[in-house]
Length: 130
Image (cartoon, rainbow, N blue to C red; front, side, top):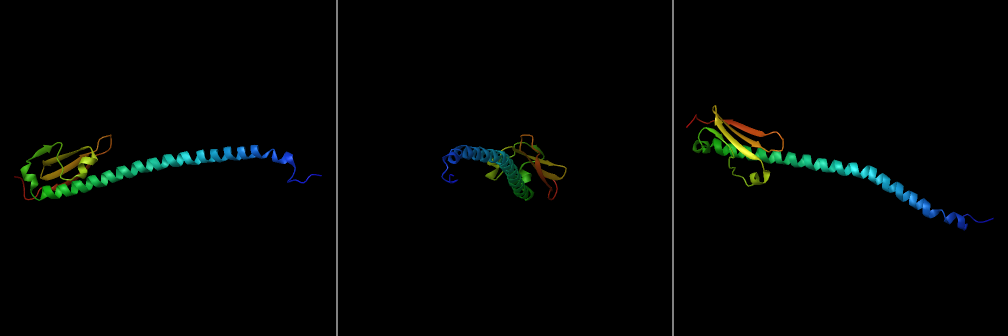
């Protein structure tokens, strides 16, 4: 009788068992890893869009404070397309800013493009029209 650990026929099966284990491990990794990677990519995109919206609203709020303080008088009434913002972050945002001075209100809108909805801020005109 041969001892189980010294039987050469037993050791011949080990390479195929190890190959089977490696294939199963790679399959499990692929089945779980690919959806996880796609989820992380989608989360990065959502985070970037939320960050862009927050930056745009901060810029709009700051610019509306400047306009409300009296800068709007130099522009006159009407719609001012491609309004030049005073923040450096506006250049990296992309899209365009549109200022509308009408109906006793200042409205500053950011149109990001790519089919995304615009963001806008609005304040009443201080002390009437020029």
